[in-house]
Length: 485
Image (cartoon, rainbow, N blue to C red; front, side, top):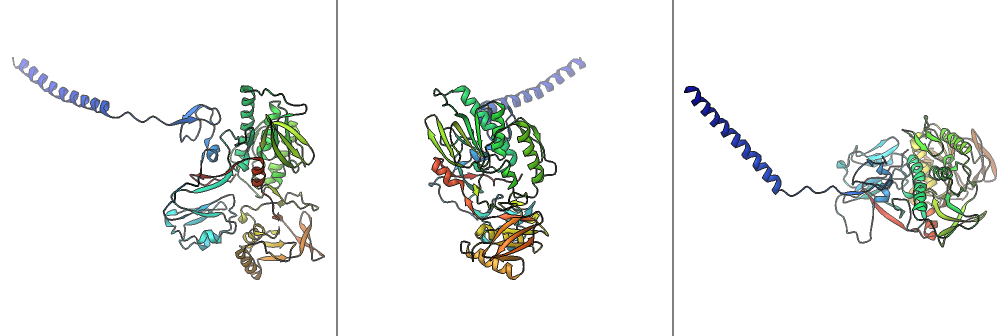
């Protein structure tokens, strides 16, 4: 009897606890049923394979494409109706313009706010910034602007869609001109734009046949993006035309850095993996020439583009040497446009550059800057700032009237401090391996030289694009675009 009573009591106690547990489960289920359903994940198509992927993804789960390549293309266009933003202004540093002179770091009263990292100024501690704007005022290359309201950078670029097509149907822009200056990105874009053109040709073939001697695609420029597009067109047996205003790899020859970073191999059409271990311009140039020689890709060198005009289902592409018809046009011109090249003996040597990046990489060097505008003065000031280089500024004119007053005053101070030598009414006549020859007011003079920077101006691609009908817009980026390779 006692056993039975104990069993009944145990069963009652067990049922009490089980009943409580079931009540809790029922309450949780009811809460879940009453709660609003989770918001669906926002999706959008991958620019490469067109399959749906969650917004904000770093990579496409289907084709593996790194979506950072399209950060500029996907950025919102700034409109005139944008309302005023408020808040404390913060410096925004354009890495493509920063020469690493460190002037902004020195002038900032809030120690540690700005720092030089890998030859570029960065906003290391934004919380320390008081918005005094001194950094923007003293920057010699206007690489620093001030922004408020959480907008970190705006950039003026051609209006290019994710498939690299502009507002002019059939006209594409790839590479640095589109807003991304990475060598790897440019090579990838060159291949992707041809892939897109191929799909377009297969999915919607033109009803109008190509005229005799016409081309499927005309590619302008043989830098990283243009050569990659040419190799891909060659691989797929397209009828293609590639125009290059200089020699093969002149873009690489004019590359201003002594070294650049290539952290991983890049897949080149018809060639395979490209990896330059020592990161030098000379090593990349040697590989570039090998690619052209071994693949048989065709490039019309020393043929400068003059105009692109829409005509029916295609375009007329004109140069100083001919007039061509192409169904599609790919512009891989670069953002610097056409620099004014000095036709002097030795001007094609690898030590001659048409732009300065990372001034701090030049130390204890004999340097010549040719030009009389702001870019030339700013380069001379950046290179001479440390006092460790021997800097010569050579200019045909008898003054620097075209430069801003601020730059002229700073140059005057640098000359007085012995950091820069200035030769007016002078011009470069020859570049040699270890020296340069200058005509100084009719007197020939030879100076030791390690590097030459020709910053004598040039033609911006923006005016050419406007004449072609390409819209130039200002886009708002969520983070500064990086131009380091």
